[in-house]
Length: 111
Length: 110
Image (cartoon, rainbow over all chains, first blue to last red; front, side, top):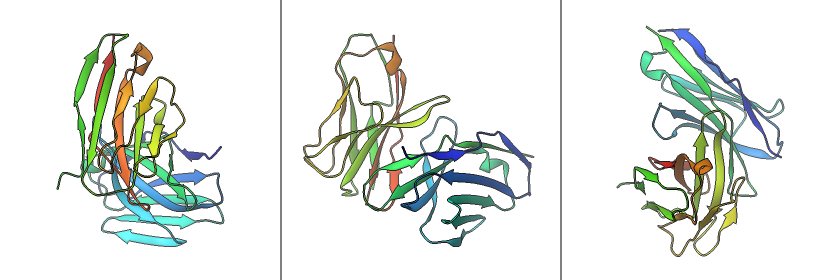
């Protein structure tokens, strides 16, 4: 059974701070890793994909992947109240087409 | 370009009725998926299709059926709705690397 774990939160950070969201996964063959943002009442929106060990930066977002530790994280720099949402971690292996999602971490950025 | 569309946006349904949720994508993705999302349970895969003409069961397939007659459409049918099928339903598609979601259908079964 493939599992993806996240702290459910809520994670509260002040505006302008760095928000750090963490995710661990159980299946060592996982090769692709994703972060989705989901606002209340909306659908998940893909914000980051990462496939190789190390860091990947996109604007204020940085995804970090460590396959040896089976760990992927998302850093949000200069957090804004508009970043308040639930963040879902997802993983995929190269053998199938299915994605496994974590339960999500609720982030609250306080003005 | 619309991406993925779902219909209806929301629906209230009497228990025992048949209901089909529609999903259409215009990205020519081979793989499509149906998820339900319930508070505290996260996203759960109902059925999937890796390519037109094929379907597979996900984590929670009971009470649901799907078909994939062509690349673009992937309808989800509840043959006889029950209150436990009250949920938000998301359709998604994938190009083999990334997965994208439709806007969702909020279904209430009374």
